[in-house]
Length: 225
Image 1 (cartoon, rainbow, N blue to C red):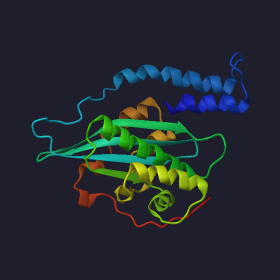
Image 2: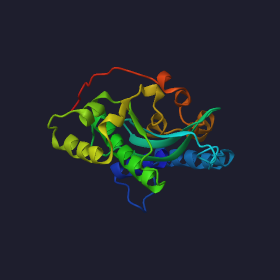
Image 3: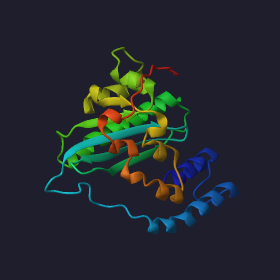
Image 4: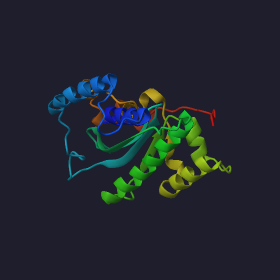
């Protein structure tokens, strides 16, 4: 769904009114996107989150946050670990186009963490699983430093960090390398074929391994304000 949102923003930048014919470059992109929609019929996403109600195993929420120059996104997965297998299933995702006013990547990453915190709270509340452990992942060292730090940040960072801390625990935030971040796909967009091949709704492969095999990285912030 990111494609048409970006096209709409392009129309705003060009100040195209609602009854004006679209520029050829935009109309071609839209038609290409529209023709792909029929391919979505080939994608089937299971509704079942937990393989067995009788023995659900250990459940954990995993929230991923990421941003690119064009958009920022967050997604929530439910990880179910049982004796015989470990599964992961998408619960909800949200993506927003980057503001028309240019922002640095660290600030966009912090916006992604903001919607990740909101999703984390709303999903656990709606599913009545408020006490379920949560792990929140971001590949931005700067955003994590803002969230975990104790300094008095400038208003942009301060306001968002304040909300994030009110909705989540700072110790639940972890760093994940960019290529292993599940929110990378919705923050950059993709076509239907890429979505189908990725089976993105099943989560990252590394999440199905034991926690001791999860990615660990030592990072330091490199602020670009």
